[in-house]
Length: 283
View 1: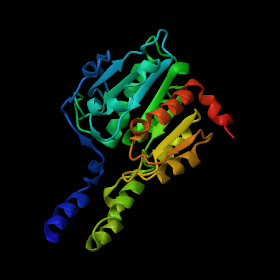
View 2: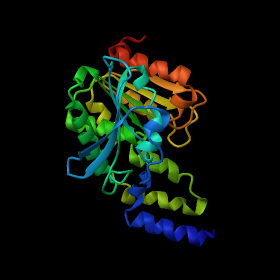
View 3: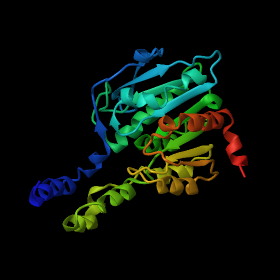
């Protein structure tokens, strides 16, 4: 592609204020079902706080009684059907799992926006917290990448009580990660970095929300993450009022630590969920 062909659409994107949309890559197609892998599940339909119709899956724990319930806030691409693979091992280990698609993803209606996704995340917290098998002492949150930002903001704004939070491969702020990506632009496009504040809006960032939360929060990040470098988790970890563990996993990339090294990472997560307060007693 010639340089002028690249510059024109990029400039149109940036200066029409649409760059915020670069954070969202939804897909409507449900590519697989948990039952394809012999996992029991039920469809859950519920409304966001503004009435947008949303869709999720409830995967029941395979133990009786369950040890708890985990809400999985997935990353920015595709939908719940491609992200459930990161967390579908939890039911076999005693945890109910709820995963849902944000507006515009999968079977959820609407168009994704930053504020809308936070509304959806608050609605998911409310819906699961109201289930009879859920109590504040047995409710956990796992947010991956974009889902980490959504989960932290939903927790800060809703005040729904949860036992503990796992934040996986999440960026500290929208502006920070956008600025890092812009540094990779061709030399002739570098001046566009001066206009970043005009097309990446501020607000509802993880670094702001995390300072308002006092529950145990653990951070997981791949050392080789090239999409969201691990210094973002280090930044967030330093802002937590009572920081829990920070796990930087050698050899892992973006969000894939739990899949690439399950024998190491899954026990870390299970141990954290079993006794979150122990994180505050770590040397």
